[in-house]
Image 1 (cartoon, rainbow, N blue to C red):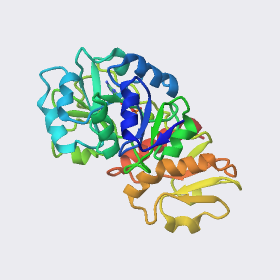
Image 2 (tube, rainbow, N blue to C red):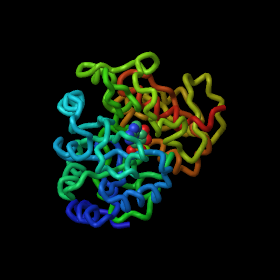
Image 3 (cartoon, helix red, strand yellow):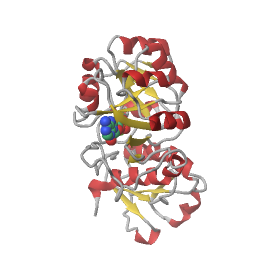
Length: 321
Ligand code: AMP
Ligand code: MG
């Protein structure tokens, strides 16, 4: 695999229908020209991603939504774009006819976001096209927050744009625009509290006005390491064997776990730091031959902690005891 920081070469690959892995502020994405259905199909093949799971289209200027969203575009879209773009918010809205079916899995809506990472923005701008990019990993596995995580999982790509570690560490928040407000389809780096200062955030249990719109990709199991992963709430719950790995939230708790292989997500429990390190630490545990089972402490579901806990629950889902 060719790796480097040549964004012009990367843009040339995109224009020619190639696949480029690139950093965003959330995780690394695997990109292709959104209007080249053949190139988009290669993404699904490379990731072994099922075709019912639609992709997010990445743009570098708000004007690009004109070719992606159906006109006239709801005013809430512009309000959110103004407040959160460029940044980790994905907006799902009715699509225009020119978006290829393979991008949206045949849905009548399309997901769009404008990343703030300078390399991502430059790549999109230079290629002159919106770029579809799911996370650059095999479907259902751990998300990549460093270039080495991409190399570990994928091999059939044309260029890996290396931009170091990503800033947020969890994926974007995905919202769907509805008549009365927005509905959060996936918790992420932008929190419900932040959204609600700009639009009404609908309550998932009571306020849905669009039950007929499917929201795929909200799978119960996702982001999973190759080894069993279990969630623990307090050390006394833990009945580990020698050789098990324990992921703690704060370095200060290290003393609570004896005889285990311990890694911490932060120095003092800062949730932003926890989010940034989550996938990297899971990758380290997955790659460590001395670790058999992995245990991870639960975090408080407040702010970005909600997104962190969403990822942890999905990563652990298939290993429920
Ligand atoms: P990722 O694999 O991290 O890029 O996540 C993309 C996710 O965005 C999908 O799995 C869906 O949950 C969501 N998504 C993308 N497009 C749509 C859409 N048109 N409607 C609803 N959700 C969508
Ligand atoms: Mg993903």
